[in-house]
Image 1 (cartoon, rainbow, N blue to C red):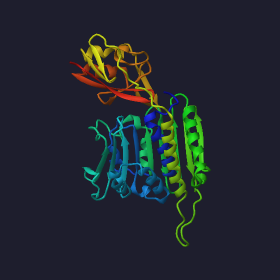
Image 2 (cartoon, rainbow, N blue to C red):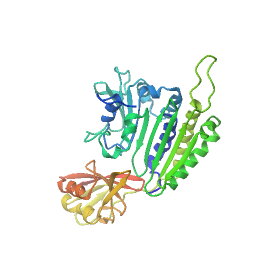
Image 3 (cartoon, helix red, strand yellow):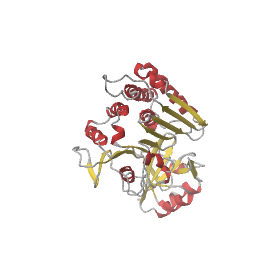
Image 4 (cartoon, rainbow, N blue to C red):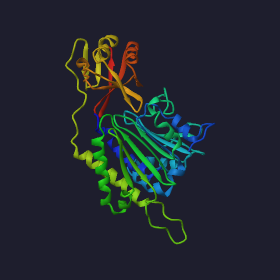
Length: 382
């Protein structure tokens, strides 16, 4: 839904925006640790955050990291310690909400949550583990715009969806920015960002941070939030180095952003199910809105292409799926629905969609995005 933050990503967008605004290059030849962890992430991820231990341990961001980590499962606390000791670390979230942390470490960690993925690479997961990779973040075209920042910035984040977020930051010299792209108009997102920033002065330690934030509108569909320069902070004991800029302010800002996101979520009543079963048709039955029994995949799924007339959805130069121009009522699909993937793989053209359907045998999944919701529809033959 243009101009609206998808509900599953709203908290991630708000939290990552502030975290990266408080956080913050790369050489060729043999793969760097950063490139190794990114190569180990599946290309179908919808959110990626990447950094290294040196940046995470900087006093400018450690407090902000701890504020976020306080909401993670206790079993992952040792993974946070491993990330701070790492050569590179990346967090990824897939379309089903499963998360994985991949860490490049110079020596085996003392952390039960981490298991070895490859020599020098260790992984922890929340939910299902990453699927077998057809492509990685490094070669998936959806990450083309974000890739230079993911591989080069000390701290970088990318969130893909109806709303795209790209952020990069460096702790020293202090500089960070977050670009939020929304198809159509970004007015609703701009209002959400303004409301979040308006909360910060209510927390006295965050007042100095508010004065360093700049919000720009390069275009109708984009918002850029930038935080640059040193923010006043008390000095340490006499003779010691000055405290990092905005150490306490950043942690307070992160906590305020998370609390604001929680309040917004609680304030909005939960929506009804986005995907409902249609009335039974000849040879087609449905259960729970997402499980279909069809007489023939090759025949009964053809209306998605023939009647739906799907067209590519392009965001920042990359195709992120196909939008239906017309409803396919027999399969419960509405005009405007986006066909994101078939059999777990991104579809970028009508011919690709038709080919995947024609090759389907016995059962196939179709990932569909409707407004802020996304579902995996399973179609199976008897």
